[in-house]
Image (cartoon, rainbow, N blue to C red; front, side, top):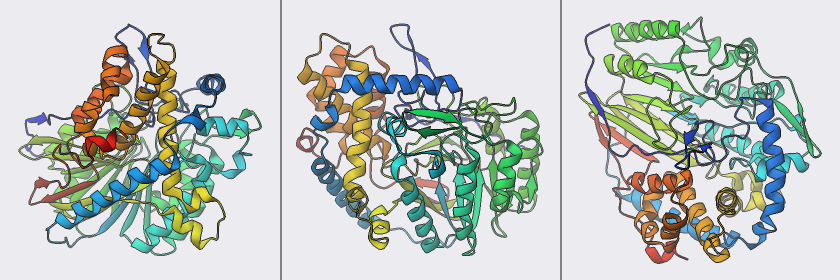
Length: 529
C-alpha cells in the first residue's frame, strides 16, 4: 500500500451516547455502583438471544403495571409536541437562509438506515405487539408500512443516482420481512434508481426472529447469509464490481469517478447474530485490494457500513464501533478516504478525525424513529460534498391515500410525543426505586430527560444546551441520580451539543458546518415550559 499513513487525533467533542434507547446493541458498562448496566432499550430485540426477548416481554408487562396511567398524565401532550416542532422548523428555515455556498455538481445519494421493517404477516397488532411498541426503543412500528411507502415515494421523486440502505432492514431478520421489503424496493429500481443494501446486526442468522400473536410471541424463520444475498440479489449483489468471499461486502461502480464500498460489518458466522460489529481478517485484504485498484484508476471511494467506524460514545463503549476499528481507520486514511457512512445508533450524528487528511463519519438516524428522516448526500469528489437530512412526509401519504387515522394525518404532532413518552418511561424505570425523590421531582426529571434526549436524537440538542444546563431538573439528576448511567448520558449530551448534526458542508477538503457552535436557538423559558 502507498505510504500515505497519517498521525491523527480524535476531535474533542466525541461524546455521542446513542445508547439511550435506539442504539442497536451498543454494549454494557459498569455502573458506578458496580452493577453491570445495559443501555436503555438495548436488551430489546438486539438479535442476541431468544431468552432476552422473553425477558423483555415480561419486564414490559411489569412496567405497564408500574406506570399506572402515566401516559395519560404525561405533559408531553400532542399540543406541546406541536409547539416544540414549530420552533424547530422556524429555526431550520433561518439557518437555511444563512447558507451562501455554491451548489455542487455531483451525483445525489440517499441514505436510509435501520428501517427494522416487520411484515404484517408476523403480527395481529395485539397485546404482545403493543408492548413491543410502547416499551421498546422508540421505533414507530405500528405505522412502519406507511413510513416505508412514503420514504420510497420520496426517493423516486428525488431521483438520486443511488439509494443506500445501511443495514437493520428488518425487525429481527424474519425471512418474510426481508422478502416483503425487497418487493417494495423493486419499484424504486423500476424507476431507474440503483438500490444498494448491506445487512445490519438484526438481519442475518438472528435466532430471535419472531412474530406477535395475542399476548405472546412465537419463533419464525430467520434469514441465512445465502438467503440475504439471494433476496437482495438485484440490490447490489448481482451488480457488484467485486464481492468479498468471506462476507456480504461488495463494491459498486456508481459512476466513472466514484465507487461505493459496501461493507458487511456484522458477526453471524458462527450461526447466530451478535450485536457488535467486526470485519473478517481476509476481508481486510480484500478491502486493501479494492482501495488500491480505485487509487490506480483515479477513483474516489465512499465506504458504507452498518456499525460505526469512530468511537461515538464515552458512556457505552462496546458493540457500537467496529471491533479493532483502528485497523480499518489506518487503511482508509492511508488511501485518503474522506467520508464514511453508517447507521446502527438511531441517532443523527457526525464525527471527524483531524489530521493531515481528515476522515469524517456521518451517522444517519433510524428511518422509523422520530423524526423519521433520511440523509441526502451530494458528492462531487472527496474534497467537496454536502450532506443534509429530510423528514419523511407521512402526512402527505395520509392525504394522498385518504387515510382517516389522525396519527397519520397529524403525524408530526403524533410522533414527537410518542418518542418522548418512550424516553419518559425509561427514565421512570430507573428512578422509581429512589425513595428520596418526591413524585413532583420525578415528574420533572423524567420530562427533562425525555425532552433533552428527543432533541439529541434529532441531532439538534445544541438548540437547548444552555437552557438545559440551567433547568432545575438537571440539578435534581445531579443530586439524586448522579450514580446512574442515565445521568452520565445527560452530561454527555450537553457536552456534545455544539453542532447541528443534520448538515455537513465540505469544500476543498475543509469542513463547514452551519447551525450550531453551542449557541441555543431555544430560550431558557421555552425549555422550562
